[in-house]
Image 1 (cartoon, one colour):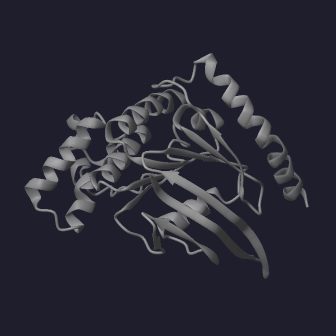
Image 2 (cartoon, helix red, strand yellow):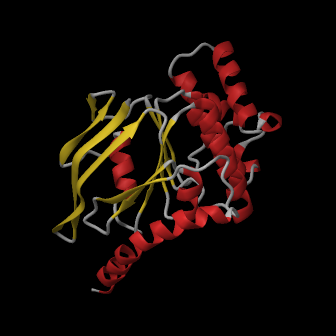
Image 3 (cartoon, helix red, strand yellow):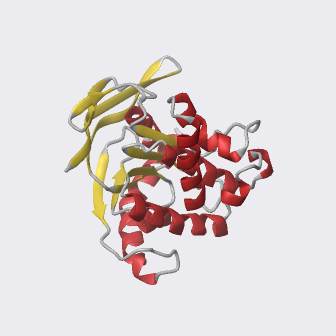
Length: 258
């Protein structure tokens, strides 16, 4: 069943008085329960596309359909996890996770029960009464993911959420996120510049061309889970994606030199 569809998304930006095409007709079909990873050269428009899906930006033309209905504004059916957790440092962990539920008017006892469930899932229960400024970067991202899941969105959007983490923490969270995906059956769209992340996480990897962007190729990854970074059998997928990206990265480098 098709959950989300992007139809011919076009987006321009103004750069020093000139109109620059960021997205040039992006088409994407996301099925219920997909884990979609989007990779591409730096600055190619991956995050812009994700923001359009979230309703944080509007396309110049084209449309996003969720359950066959057009969307243009933010909504609780789509929750974003950013590279930086965007947590409230003056609130405790449990209060951060509950925040969206509180704004939605969920009764206190119910939102506490929901929040405790996702704190347990993210192995944060013993830190529930800590303040977020007391946590490591990796733990802050766990809180951000727990907060997003607590809202029970139809689609979880993730914009390079592990980019600032050390390699050991990232590898652990890559495994945990796979387990959470299998447990919750959420539809996830995950933007990354890291090819290994895309291979480990995605059942589909969408490769973006250099700007102006559109999807160059979709690669299906049908491989057992949980996938581990050190699994040599994943290398064939890594090299396939790398080959597709090489010319796009080179084109990006030429653009930067102009």
